[in-house]
Length: 312
Image 1 (tube, rainbow, N blue to C red):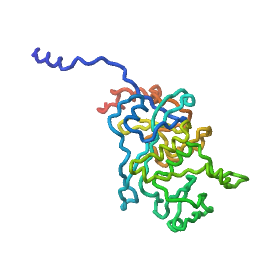
Image 2 (image 1 turned 60 degrees about the vertical axis):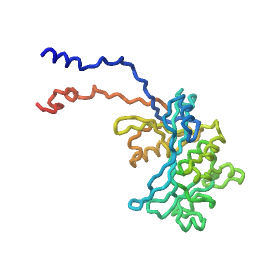
Image 3 (image 1 turned 90 degrees about the horizontal axis):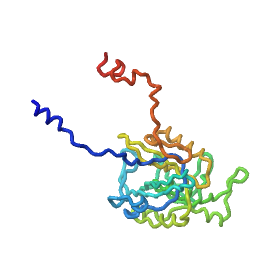
Image 4 (image 1 turned 135 degrees about the vertical axis):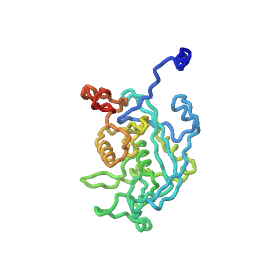
């Protein structure tokens, strides 16, 4: 009998020394960042992340389904990773490297009922046009009047609008119009030339050719743009750094009210349900501890009648 007991007690291994694991910091709020790479290779990624071991070469090309329910089709898709690094002087001393991700699909963007296609002009402005308007290269007409768009436009790819807005904010591209006495008026031709902002070689991205994007970012290598950091929590409780990819701010913007309003509206509509955002100066994300002092003692006692699965 005693021999059997000895075997039971020896079922535990000797264990290992307990050490405090290194925590991965997450950040939340608006931060000023610099773009340091676009769709980098495995070696470039390792360098950007201070020598971190990157197991596999990044895969940026793939496919996705698009179109209305019952009539979907598979098209080419490309993931565009813009590696960003915070400016510690403008981010409360925070030094962090992460990425802004865009997905482009090799298909034009249509509205829900497929009656209009999104168009983009040479200044990066978008509008919605019927097929007849696109064929005639006419300015789309809305109930409120003509769309604010140049006649030199083309259909936009799915995801192109957000990508263009990010680049415009990063390069500090000006508006091609001035607001004068309550009316928008065109700037001079020379001024408008400085406002051009349209990608010319998007089809090449779907073949793995990102030279255009790398060249565009290199125009202003020291520029910065403000992005909204958030924290995504998965169903199994894991947390990841997230970036709000629908709106970006030029580095000189200090009024975040429009950004806050947009995020709130998108959250209320059901977007980003698993991601927490906070429009404030960038700071480390800390999970607030539960205040147990406000919970009745009965709820904490596993043997109380209220909480016991066996009842009284």
